[in-house]
Image (cartoon, helix red, strand yellow):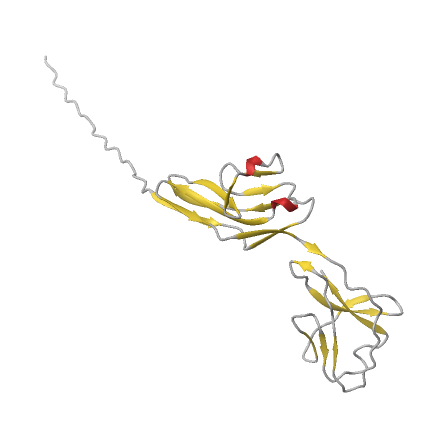
Length: 202
């Protein structure tokens, strides 16, 4: 007896997804100004996509900058162009740019200004006593200290009896201009009883 067998062969189709090459595009970059404090770590981010994966190159003051050439005070992350300044110094300040590069093009960040943050002291001087009649308006000047970046100015009230300090709530009668000066319209006796008005910064 002869048994006939039938062989069935399955055909397999291999699907290969073709990845489209494309130039880099930076999607994470630092702000225009990056500030550091002595003894504190600071970073400047630079992350891009692209096919093939881009390499990263930095410039400082329009000159090629190699983070690894600055001992162990800074490092560039292996999977991006992000630089971490571990111990930033004054000599590190400058205008930085990150370039993400592959064979199809280059993407560049904005100019990034690395600067040391600083906050000076208020100009020395004696307290000023102002006599204000009820119903009158007055301007209380504030001379802010030198600071980088610009300090935030606030006005507070200090109780001369208890020493308690609380913030002044600005309203339609009490306003502050961009320079930190306080304006009081139609002064009322209840505005400042046994308190002193002071401008402070942070």
